[in-house]
Structure formats: C-alpha cells, structure tokens
Amino acid sequence: MVSLAHLIPRGGGSESHLERAGVAVLTVGDLIDRLLDDEPAVVVAAAEHLSRRWTRPTLAPPEILDLLAAHPSMRRAADRLRDLID
Image: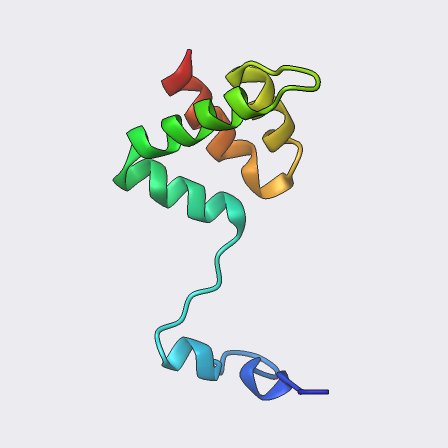
C-alpha cells in the first residue's frame, strides 16, 4: 500500500507538496465551470452528445443536466450549462 499522507499538510497553514508543485485539486463541478469559462461550445456539445447516446430511456439535454446537478459540486455548472442549452 502506498501512503499519500506526506502530500497533505498537517495542521494550520502549511502548504502541501502538491500545492508547492502547482497542482490544484478540482471537483468535477470546478472543472466543468472552468471549461464553461474557456470553451462553452465544447461543454454544450458534450451535453448534447450525452443526450443522443442516452437511449433507455431517452433523455433530453435538460434532463441530463438534472441528473448531473444531483452531484453537489455540479449544481452551479449544471445551472450555467442549462442557460446555454435553453
């Protein structure tokens, strides 16, 4: 088993090895938010692609977004994406 404990700071304000290396940990929602900032058309196309592939039962893009919004980190990104799809 590999321990990653050395990567996480202990106690108050010390930064981790990951932070010193410039590595940021993102939630799925944070990643989608960043993609919406940089390439909104790509994110819209991905949601539409998911909708076309979802066949049992079929789901429209807004329904796909409802499913994604169930994830706590995805609520904001799903709302932003919903504004672009509607």
